[in-house]
Image (cartoon, rainbow, N blue to C red):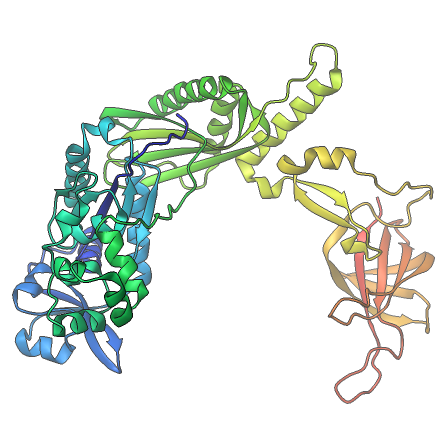
Length: 527
């Protein structure tokens, strides 16, 4: 399906108030720890003291709250369980939940530290309406061990405000102001000091503040708070920032009973590939980047991507690419208790340019080469399949640039390399990734080659020499590099090496400004 536009947006705000403690309890359960109903808190160092940053329901019932020093918490409950805060782990869990929420809408945004925004505009009917969607989402997360609160409204700030006070509120379009006016001010999520200032002024609810004139509120509490208030009242809106761009095309298959066998998974992908190709073909497009997402029943999501050098217009090509990817991944596609949904999307597409293929053999050859590169890249990764482009530089290792073949095949086939008129070649066709140091016991100076050298523990006696080829480093670069003298040498066994002296005699100096002998390297081998 493709993107759509509607008049009114609908935003679902999801809040996980106990995320840190829920994460810790889930981890302990996975490690086989017995269930513990003891009150738990998470502490972090603030103002040179350990303070509560998160707590569970049992600790809240004891009267504890965030910001309370750890010493006070132990005074209330000496046996309370204490864990160190880990914001990075909390964010990772929240991101994993956001991945799982992609099953409801591809437009999911983080609302740090413990919330999410879901743009459910135009897709709630797929789940039986907004109430059914919210109930299904929250029930699934509750089964996974999370305490959740959710609300739906026309603006993200209004939905967020409602979710912080009461779970399950659904506000019709245009009713945002009526819904939030009775709520206490803390639900806005404004700064604590600002909320205290409003309370001292006798303003306890959002309606109390909304009844005052905007210039008065702005003059006393700042324009940022006024903007936040208007967004909560539905008088303005703050767009959410989805974590991922909306794919150009999406097709998916949901299962009443989870699937786990490889055969069913591959057949489902093949069916989705044909559906995706049909949708793109109607608009004359082909896929350049494909993404298959597998949603497990326990909330885990596995995503596999495949890129192509040319726009794909055949379902069997997509099927073959993902078969290659599934066979090549180091971590097998673990279905756990099964997948209840598989989604295939084209995140990057291009208009297909029609070419004469019946009479032009080059077109067929190019297609076959591109298909081969795609299949190899699917197995070992696109960054490992390279083509080389010429670069205007006299430095040997900078005279070419390795780029992914999938994206630069056409440029590589049209690249103009310097014509080679010398025979044999002056330089090796392939160089070492890094020049390798060799031991040269004796070499005549100032610009003579070595008589003998040792490389990789093997000694070589030099029989024939050609050179030197002097290469000065690029003076406009910041790093200062010495001049190189390259030699083509041949040993008694007929092996030919490309050696260079890294610096001229007298050019290299130590920390005491004393001249030292330059080092020698082998940079490549001649065939």
